[in-house]
Amino acid sequence: MALRQIRVDGDEVLRKISKKVEKIDDDLKILVEDMFETMYDADGVGLAAPQIGVLKRVIVIDIDVLKRVMINPEIIEQSDTEMQDGPEGCLSVPGVEDVVRRPNVLRVRYMDLEGNVVEEIAKDLYARVICHEVDHLNGILFTDKVLEK
Ligand SMILES: [Zn+2]
Image 1 (tube, rainbow, N blue to C red):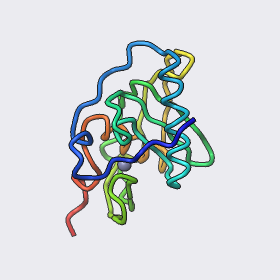
Image 2 (image 1 turned 90 degrees about the horizontal axis):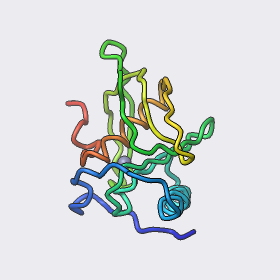
Image 3 (image 1 turned 180 degrees about the vertical axis):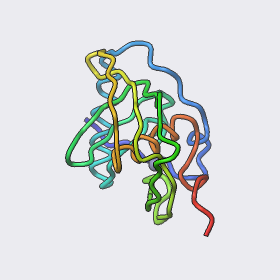
């Protein structure tokens, strides 16, 4: 395992669209291990591959109560009436915390590291982290979505 360098806002890799993963191989497994190590080292709860300069649709999440690897995640349904406004930060935007509106409930579909297609309902913090990380795969940072004060 190796620590990777976290890219910060201003690095154009963070503004690119990541590519779908076509196959799960050893390189991908190493990438995932490195992402967890890098995320834990930086005290984060989620990390997307482009944040370490890899334009692949892979995210890792660890919010204590659950830990996930999501390959090609897609938010296939989300509440547009039940929203949550809460503080967010990002390892790629150090020192900034601001309030972002996210759906309180969503349904996500992804592939796990064994290649199984999984569908899950996510709520509260888990839903927020998924939205934040999926945004990274589309070149979006949370600072683009901060609520007007
Ligand atoms: Zn982030």
